[in-house]
Length: 404
Image 1 (tube, helix red, strand yellow):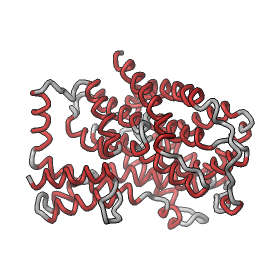
Image 2 (cartoon, helix red, strand yellow):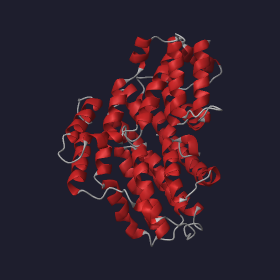
Image 3 (cartoon, one colour):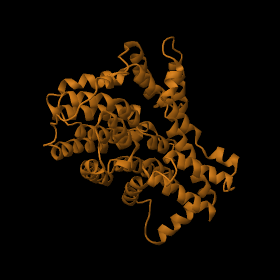
Image 4 (tube, rainbow, N blue to C red):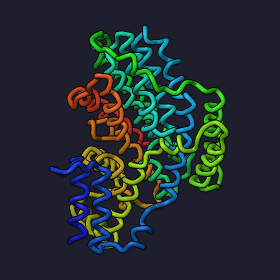
């Protein structure tokens, strides 16, 4: 009973995002839940260590380092500035920006793309007298959708790929078509909903806000791009993904110009801590066989999580209650390792669902928080006005795809 209480309180805290009178965020709450599991002897220290899936953590860590190479090399800034030549044609710029962020998110993780693109977009859009809000929401939407296409597109996909022992090529072959269709539909939806709101000259960006962007370093950026290409090739070999990724990241650290400290400073330690803590919390309830009890209870009432449509619906709802990473961690407990399509459906549905409301994905929060220093405020209603229809049409596309 104590284990279940700790689990429920932890997930409630993650859903709310804070604890009254305390300054804990979602990561802090998850960590507190993991600590409680150990302190109250729901799980031993060796069991807690064993609960953490280190191949997943290693893959996530390595990809963050590779992406840091590109960010410090000025690659991301250069990409955004290249497409700003289309600012005079807002709809075309929106299409180019969404396509670019979707493609890069598929291979470099959506959170990193949002972190790197948002500041540059804010300044470029304001200077062009455009309303930045539709474009920033488009950035979050497209990065989420694009990231659904591959195992390395976002943290929850990495987790699903590792725990489900899924093949990189087979995963992309199944997930890429609905992601592509959803991206196109989302562009049309945003263009129509925001058709009267593209122009806005009321924002002002201070000159000092453009300082600190890493200029393009052709050599360092080329190294990063080559590393990504090599990594994707290695993912099609029998070599474990985490070994390939950490090996390539290790080679990038061997630089005469770029300090390893600067690369490691861009690793999202909060996200890694969140993963480790949730592994421990979920292992605590697994030891008590609580997932099996829940599954039996659902079966008795005709709710079968093995049904792809039910799984999609539950994933979409849960992802918007506690965010898609914690939702995915919980739902993987109920999947059949011998039925990969269940894992594919969970990956795509949890990622698509992240567009529904602001707390649905970390990418949304990154865009909103990164835009705030520039005086650009994206509220719940503004996001939901686009996010809800985009998510619904994306999930419909997924369900139609599952019919095949």
